[in-house]
Structure formats: structure tokens, C-alpha cells
Amino acid sequence: MRWTLKDGAWSSGVISFSEFPLIQAVEARGALLEWNIDEPERSRPRITITDEDECDWLWELIGEPAHVEFVQSAQNPNMRKAFNVAAQWNLETLLALRKLAHGQWLRDWWPTSAVDGVPKLSDEGLVREMNDVAMQVETIVDGYQFSRTEDTSVSLNRTRDNQAQSDYALVAGTVQECAITGPIFSGTSSPAWQGLPAHVVDATENPVHWHVEAAPNPVLDIQVLLADKQSNGEGLEVRVLRGPEELAHGYLDKRGFASVPLGLTVAEVWLQDWTDVVVQVGVDVNESQEVRNRIRAFAQERLRARDRLSFAEECVALY
Image (cartoon, rainbow, N blue to C red; front, side):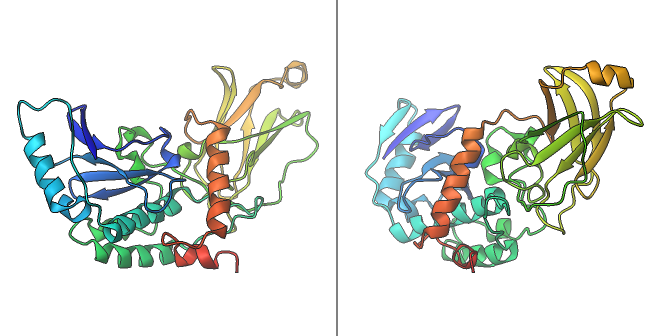
């Protein structure tokens, strides 16, 4: 087990992905443990020590000799920026921590979509089971962090220098009837999952539908597919962009609909080239379709998986 010093913190292990939705994480006392989402259940995490004194439980995970060796090496002023210890992993503790990280990921990033056939998971059920798992490692994690049920958008993954986006996360979805018809020009777009509140918008690709109307007043109508009839899109900001230029902006109503005045004459609307116009919903975050596709593929794998990481909600989701 190799420890390296980076930005003043000791860490071990490697994470292949840099995008938050592709990482599963659990916050322990004095440390953050992270896994790539598609790693096997017994994979070793990347451990980042945030407080060496608080992290006095480390021996429970890697063995007492390895913990003692870590403390001695980390506190040695002559120690270089990297050293090795011989870890003896406690697999039951490892699995419990990984399952908590997996459960938190399910709450934050599970791509619920009626369009794609990905069923919704009960947050209440996930929280209940996560608290049971947390009891197994109560000296390592604080179970209260899993008690929130109203807003799952603050992902533990976002503890890593992403405070500006900390109130946003994965969205969920179902098809709704669009109220827009007869456009001059129409289009679709995909919002960044990291730029939306959790569990509001369908996680399918291109859930944002828009069109341009010239009469009686030039407007751009937007309909966003919401998660279900209980989802409320009210207050989500929408921006109509051509490159860096903002043509118009507005806010969705609770049904996920917005009619945005364009500030153009009818003649100007007909003369505009709408092919390079983008409708952005939520916060502007640089996120690729590949990231969302990886999550969708992982979700399909989880629906078929029955392993030690599986939650009851995953197992019953299709029934």
C-alpha cells in the first residue's frame, strides 16, 4: 500500500476518473474514501487523509501494523513524499464502506428515466439500509450523514474543491406530454447532470425540447421532461445561447415549461439562423455525453447485478 503526499494531504490508491458522477465516495472521520464506479466490490479505495488525529480508526481497515507504520512515516520530518506499508485489509470493513459509498452514489447519481426504462429508487429505503450498514462501521463513519431524505443533490464527491456546484447533482425522469407545437424552428438539448437539482429532470439524453414561435409575439417555448408528476421544475433557470452570446433567459414553471420572450420582431425571427442556438437548463457545467453514457451503462449493469454491494432497492426496482 503506497502513500503519497499531495497538496499537504496523504493519499493512497488511484482513481481513474476525474468527473464526480463516475466516482463513489464515503466520508469517514478524518478521511475520504473513493472508488471508480465500475470497480469490483472488493477493490481497494483511494484514501485521502484529511485529519490524522480523527483518522485513528485506520487500523480497523488496513491492520494495526500498517496503521502504526503509516503514523510513524507520516510524522517523520525526514520522510520523503511517498512510502509503502504492508496493509492487511479487513474485507468486511472494506465491503461495508464500499457499500455506503455505493448507496450514496445511488442517491446522488442514479439515472432514473422512464424514457430509458431505468426505474426510480426509493430514497427512504436507501437511507434505511445505509444506516444499518453504517452501524457496522460506527467507529469509522458518522451515520447521521445518511439521514437526509429531502435533498440528495449534495454529493460526498463534491467535497473535493467543487463548492460552487455543491447544490447540484444527478436528475431523474419520466416522459411528459410536451405543450409546444407548430414551430418555426425546433431543437433539443441535454443539460449537465452536475448542473441540476437532484431528481427533477428525466435522465435520458435530450430531455429539453424547445421551439421558436413568431406570433403573436416572438418567443422561444421550452418543455423539459420532468421526473414524474410529483417533480417540480419551478425556478430552474433557462438560457438561450448562441456561442457566448445570451439571446434570452427565463425560468421554468413547476411543469417544466417556460415561454421566453426573444425581444425580436416577427421579421427578425424568420431571418435568424437558429441552427447554432443552444438552450441551457440549470448551471453551466462542462460535462460530456460520454460521462452520462457511462452512468447509464453502469445503471443497467446494476439492475442485473446481485452482489454484496446490492441494496434491496436495486433488487426490487424492476418488480
